[in-house]
Length: 378
Image (tube, rainbow, N blue to C red; front, side, top):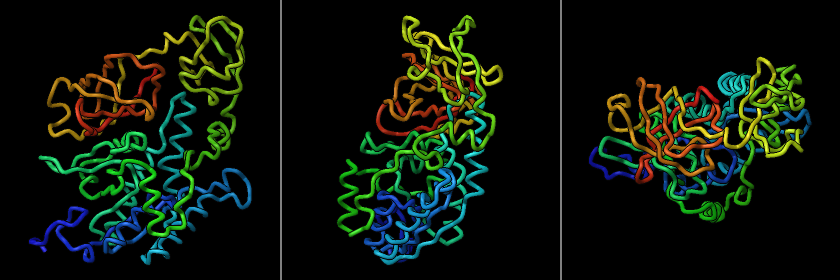
């Protein structure tokens, strides 16, 4: 086996002797990954996690999107002829992701639960399950690239910047990266993925992309928080930076830092933005757009994917993202320890809030160098 040439997954085995667990969400991306690998002759095992029941969230019968996704994943497995398993991870998901999401929102932060799900569920528990199934690696439908570098596997942004999911995968560790594969990361457009789905005759070829966080139906964060934390929507005051009361609100959970619309305090001159949330006093502090600018960002829980130890240099000149939808911008990272740092943006960013991720990229090229969590907001 050691003399066998590397297969398309970078392993020294023929595909038929290579077992791959594919994390299948029921969507087109992961379905294409499973079908593509099966078509190449790999020993594919599909695994779908039942994380959350939309029907319970919406309190409607027949609205269980989780059940529909499981059904779709199973149909793909039947179409392509490989084994498929469903694992009940609802309790794990609630404890590892949903509870923290609710607490973070109540604390006035802006959490990113998809990152925690990848970190604490998919790339932890599911990855361990894949190893228990004697899989040689685990593949997902994420749009991100894994490339071999001088010091081992590296994480790189997807070839298609519009689909790139590196922001949500910054906490992937080097050890996990050695086991993970991302077969779609090199594709140039979603149209290519759908063309592959059609080629394999997959029943999900035309399935729409999911737009919402899986446990937040219709994007209504406040309704989910109120259900998880009764009394979370207590009213309070909207005040300016000097503490002058400008109006009332129906709960700080309805607001996010940087928000302009829906404040209910129009006609006061220049536009006002949410600058800060104070859950203890139930105050929403507003002010001019200029007051949103942030240049220095404290981060912790740093996951570093660079070649040298994170705290081996006084500073790192990189690019960073504090929102998934914005391009990386130049910054300097100054490590305070192996897992904490201060990030200085060369150009200020508006609306940086505790709970967001700050993801690090190489100043040149597509390499992802890790990231950390913003822990102290405005």
